[in-house]
Amino acid sequence: QVQLQESGPGLVKPSETLSLTCNVSGGSIRNYFWNWIRQSPGKGPEWIGYVFYSGSSNFNPALQGRVTISADVSRSQFSLKMTSVTAADTAIYFCARGQDGYNHSFDYWGPGILVTVSS
Amino acid sequence: EIVLTQSPATLSLSPGERATLSCRASQSVGTYLAWYHQKPGQPPRLLISYASNRATGVPARFSASGSGTDFTLTINSLESDDFGVYYCQQRSDWPPLTFGQGTRVDIK
Image (tube, each protein chain N blue to C red):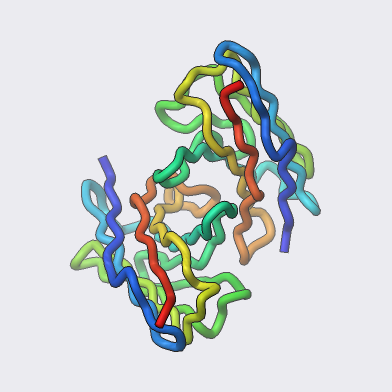
């Protein structure tokens, strides 16, 4: 059974960089797309971006320029960095796998980590 | 960006009743539409991919249909575990992948 687990600071100061890691266990990181998705209270999820295991990536244009996603196949992990955060970036951040080696939908999710942006 | 509009916002039903949820896309997404169920404090769970394909382990009381811009998720004979929020999501014209704002299914 594939399992994903997010980790990182739960509190980030405004203008600083948010850094999260997703650890993948129970399955290979190879041949899949790995995504970050966030959700503000009471809202629908918002897709942030993906990294393919080979390292190629793509992002939500609304966040482009602030987001980097990378993968470490040897550690079975992938990471999110978001620069210049504001209170609007406060949300639960999920990592998720693109289903069946494509990225049409997301079949495995981490439990999520709440990140609060506040001084 | 493709906008997904879900209706109704809230559905109040009793166990055993049928729920019909709608998702409308601002432009055609073909069949690149998925449905998820989310309970409080949990991540969304994939129910349906490619508009009508049930994900592994999803009960047969969940069915979905549609293509282009209009999609429907039907839950036959609601069970207590089915209450929560349902989201649709498209991956046709991307980036970005987008989600709807959700339909909440409450116990009447």
